Amino acid sequence: MGQKTAIHLEGLLYAKPITYWDYIQTDALLSLQTQRTLLPDEMVFIMYHQINELLFKMILWEINQISETEKIDAEVFTDKLMRISRYFDMLTSSFDIMGDGMEIKQYLKFRNTLTPASGFQSAQYRLIEFASTDWINLIDKRFIDKISKDMSEEEALEFMYWQAAGKDYKTGKKSYLLNEFTKRYSENFVKAMKDYEKTNLWQKFVELPKEVQENSELVEAMRHYDKTVNITWVIGHYKAALKYLENPYETKEATGGSDWKKYMLPEYQRRIFFPSLWKQEELDNWGKGLV
Image (tube, rainbow, N blue to C red; front, side):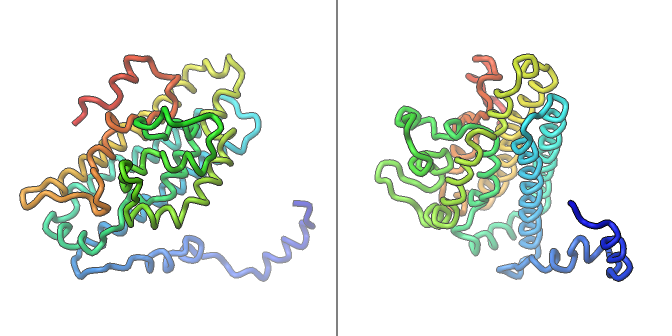
């Protein structure tokens, strides 16, 4: 850092010894759970989603190390991708907490106090998508023919697949859920689309020398990440939601009012980060027959 070593060493003499709780900020972390009801299982729901957001932050941290490295080799690229995939593996297996860790009757009561909030409003997850692939791969497939080469990021944002969770494309009207999400994060998303245009995972891959692009371990890591995020994790989320939204007591729609099955299932959305790494047969059967 260009600093004088002696000064830093002397500073250690007067520094307050670090403790676990100060370093991890335990007290602050444990004070961030605020229930809207008196139902005990709402606390499980809150903490579970906060853990998800922390994992999303870890994922973005790893992706950014790839995107910010000018010349990355196959070994480091592969290692980072597998780290990220393991985080998503944790997210996938954790759906058992949602699927088996809350009473359906309690959930059906406290969820009504959450309307119109929805997990759809996770901005970090949208950033992960922008950091993973060219934004053209996130466009709602029903409107891909409306996308032009000179379309701005602001315009393209209106055709992202997740707009379907709160937008009537016949009238152009957005739900309150989507309007609030857009107002809060649209500038962040447009900036991310621009920032990651040349540095998202796919672009970092295609800028590698041809022999590195053909590295079997790296290619498999890319495919594994793509499938883990866009099929395995999504199906896990879908199955957890299915237990609560189609239950013995009553059938519910998502808190945001979306057609949650078509929004979530990969065979409808067909989100694929790296389509060039898959065979046509694999693309045609993306996410089919899993539920």
